[in-house]
Amino acid sequence: MADAVSEAFIEEYGIPVYREGWLDRENGVERERNRIVSITTLSGRTDHGAMFLDATYEGNLMAAARMAKATKGFISPGEFES
Image (cartoon, rainbow, N blue to C red; front, top):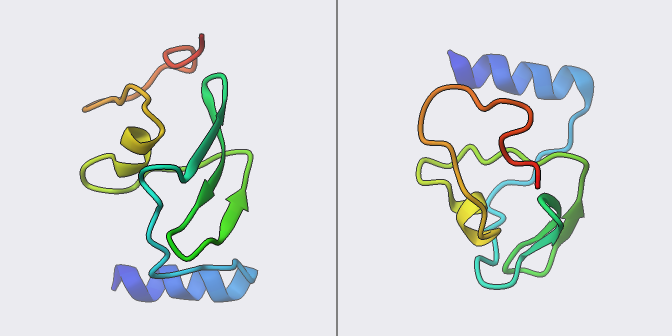
């Protein structure tokens, strides 16, 4: 059911979705100070953005960015600011 709702939302708003884009965990995360500004996949696709969400089970994006990660609860707005 959740998949159907997500897919309907994506279609309704024309949101581009790129599946099976495996993150280059060695060199695929570009940071400016404490912010991720782009990610690159193993196939070479680079995406820039104002915000990236790590929705992986183990925090793969945060680990590749070499950033601290929250393990439970909410993160305060200033927690990752340096």
